[in-house]
Image (cartoon, rainbow, N blue to C red; front, top):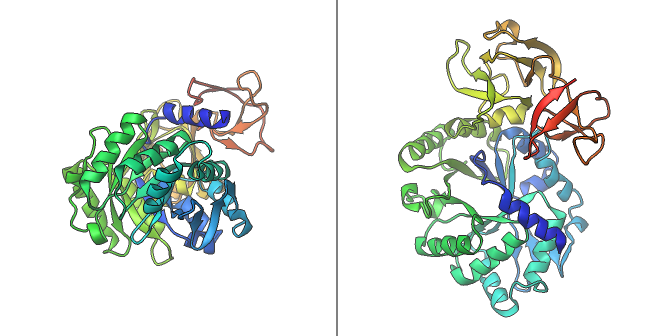
Amino acid sequence: MKRFKILVLLAALSVAESWSQSGVYVGGHIRRERPGTIEKLRQSGFRYVILFNVNVEADGTLTTDGETICRDGRYVFDETQPHYADDVRLLKTAPTGIERLEICIGGWGNTSYQNIRALVNSDGTGENSILRRNFRALKEALPDVEAVNNDDEHAYDAASATKFHVMMYDLGYRTTLAPYMNKTYWQQLTTALNRQRPGACDRIMIQCYDGGAYNNPKDWHLSDDIPLHAGRTNYQTDMQTSVRQMQTWRDDCEVEGGFVWIYNDETWSLQQWAVEMNRVFPKHSDEGVVTCYAGRDYTGFTNVLPVGRYCVGELAAWGFAPLGIGNVRIAEGYELTLFTGDNFTGTSRTYTDPEPALAAFRSRARSLIIAPTGQSGIVTMNNEQCTMNNEAYDLQGRRIDATQHRGIIITRDAQGRVRKAIR
């Protein structure tokens, strides 16, 4: 019980993902074609991934694609999918552009929310209820999943849905909503949920495809303080048409992010879609020190990257495809190291000039490191500044393999972010 109270506290303290502006639903294809699909997602540049889907059966058992995930308060998915928990953990393990993972409940023809309504009314959501026991087991098995996406397309019962999502918040899951119709229901759910658990619902994702093809995102701002994302499908039309539509939504409808339905085959390029969407809804940092340009003459898409280590997926999350950096400007006191290979491999060169002549490295970088001058190496925590002993982190504060790296001590601010490196 103590562990889950800690999870709730952490969720309450965290800020809604203002950076998580591009997302994709993924189906069972990622399990059937692993590990290739996992690596494609990690390198895609999508910043949130929604795992579709978790079904709630009439007896409270959690299933997907005919396989059981949790039953009787136990995670049993490893009996048929022994790699799944590790694969999910890997999705958010650096290097990757993915910052948030969600599970989806619902969908067209799915009876999960009818079953949830019946279970809430008969068994409740208390400590011994089957819903709480099974979703607690799921959280313990997949701790990196931090939200549940509500895609109810049939039940539309705000009372039971509110109780369910309050329970989910208490277990460590925030809620996102994926409506395509019945605005009154979604308004009631949003209001009731955030009244009982402020901040529990932190994103609205309006479907603008299939049954929701005629939706205008402007009509779906359910709350002034909840970001609105709008979605397309990878099969609805060509990518550039969808990107232009997202630009219109951004400019005219106050849409703050976009998502795509659905990665369930290999007929489209995840990375190409993600990069283009990330240019519509770009990632920002107040601590940027290197300005990167897609064009060779300081033109094209531009973004300012902070100190850190960037592989293919992370660069894509910032709007740059592999080989997509044509020129740079470097702030005084910082250095940029470019690598021709991903994951800091291949030929490399370090630059410190404000406007360096990239020469042979122009439009050739697949990974890069930005650091204070003379400090582009990997850093190591020591026991005086951290309760964990001898753990290595990169300059963005992410834990990495310390086997070959020693000798630099870093300090961290109250939020745990790296602030200074000294030799």
